[in-house]
Image 1: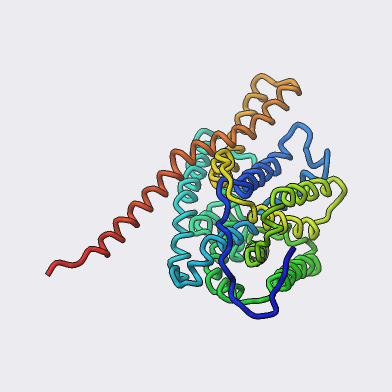
Image 2 (image 1 turned 180 degrees about the vertical axis):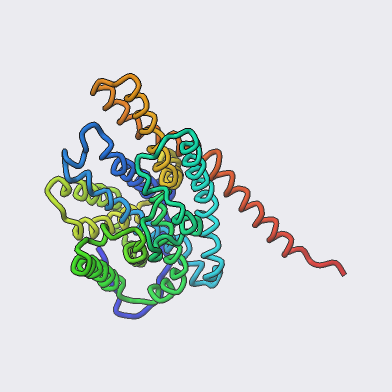
Length: 375
């Protein structure tokens, strides 16, 4: 399926990246699995004890990190090569995309903690609300080897790691785009990630995905780069024709082998292939997938606080009136649609308006700069 030329040549024009298609659907499914992973232990019977597969939600995080590298390379790669976007402009755009909504969500976390403390409700996990960890969270540097246990909006460690990946992206992509051996380069990238995983296990006794979140750069940046390398692979005619069957097959195998045991390295290779196949798909018009994919960022940002509030209310109800086991399971299951609803509200009321405001200011600045000065 992949064929490398023997003549060095820069990356050629790639097919238009499919929007409202498989990649958007996969983004949402991965976000949903991360939510399930976060609430698995809160079930009346821990889902981790029912099947070890539920404990592999870190694979969905790996998928997100690789997908970020892939999508940005396919979207911004040509503009970087044509010098339409420099490193500072690219980094500024990415920070403007993630930081404003992150700050709003962090403010909601602080408000929640202060309010519950005032009324005498102690958090179930006080280690998540350490004031000395707030400043690193605000500036998204908590994954840059900052001492202490990461807290507050814990999943944002990935954004902290991605900021560094964003800063490296233009330089790395220019070099990667010039290669005539993209498949070999991808194999080297995967081997480097495996080496990092084994080194973490040898030195610290844990796999890469189990490293403390303050070491997030070690995990996040290499996975982003793997996604970037996948984007460099040529999209062949065969890949375009069979994109959906290949993507479905890769997804089915990834899900299926989790029931058989822990095959993290093989799963990573399959996830990379899944991204390649889904990205090779012809443009679709799956409006539901586009809407779901757009919701995935808000779901990522909001799910931790939503579940803290939800299960806090469930505990309060249980303490007052008690609940039969069936009702407990129902309330636990309802936490998942509750996170989706909360994410939808946040996307409509916060994230989308913020992005419109930022783009409006940028458009005004461009218009002012483009207006010739009066004599």
